[in-house]
View 1 (cartoon, helix red, strand yellow):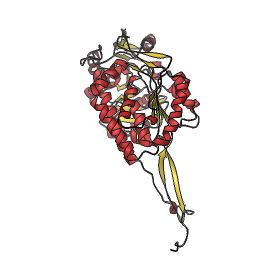
View 2 (cartoon, helix red, strand yellow):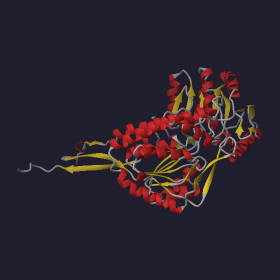
View 3 (tube, helix red, strand yellow):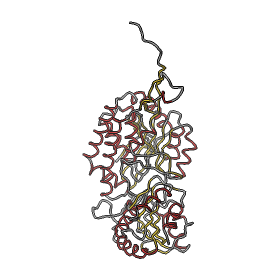
Length: 479
């Protein structure tokens, strides 16, 4: 596989290239051109020029393009899934799921494009509003920069690109350097679906250079970013007066009460903690279990975790793929060792194995330990007992993050109280925080981000409210 920067629909060859590695075996699967300052400047200029075209596209045209792109993506499900598995290392089953979600995200964006509208302003509801009439419209905000992470390189690109096109904006995609090929597939599908080439660019390259140049550019009006809280804060400092949407990190927690359906809770936690080898911002990282059912929960969970099959992600029988790279594998290993040296106890797993890290359950972990306090981004879950609902909620809410949380109980009153007290973008009952469907408002508070994804909601951050007002004059015009 080989790609070069795409600027306004045109290929730009570069002097330097970046190899792309297969996380499973470390082999080079292809290379991509490394964008330089000239390419970035051309991409921004193309986006500024392309915006003059994109904002004139009718809602019908935007919707038609997005719907066609959705169909094209879905028609290539197996082919695209293979590319995702090669560059990300997620299992082929997970990759197929991502392709289907991408198609759905584009379809949702198509539907949202048709519904984009303002409303009438009731001026005469104000004392000084007599004889005034008007409305507001939602108009495209301007060129959008989409900075995409490695873990969902296709669907998270679609979550940024789809709403941008639906809103009438031009778009620049900056894919993760480790996983650039999916972004090109998305762009190519949109172009084949009829998107004018001037409207889209793909500029691969390091975030520290290419990303920062895009963020600083005066030609960019909107930045939508998924990644770590540290990088998100740096983008906020560099961006100036731009509209920002940021989906950042988390240490997502679950509280399991003594009336919970324990087999359900264990099954959900197993899936939520180890999907994509835990390399998901809403991966279950902290589990608090009421003491009366603590051992029972572990007895249900541990056999399920031990049954997870690591191996070649291209095989249908593989449950969990590798860690994205050696640096992250070393980071996870050190994090677990640090936890053990401070009193944590491994119930299962705990070791690197080739390019993998074993699915790991740790107990007896202090709340101030990094594996609880920070985002682990790893196939590791901490399970600790609590004595009451109050203690559990207190621990669950004690986080600088606030993306999503989960509660397992049959008590609707406690569920409602948890919803009111947990400061997060979403609270799930009898479900883990890892659950997401592409039509819902998705995002966090505190260090977990700004704004919401989901096409209907993302469009709001990519448009401006523009007022039209009329002072109605007295009398009638004489014919």
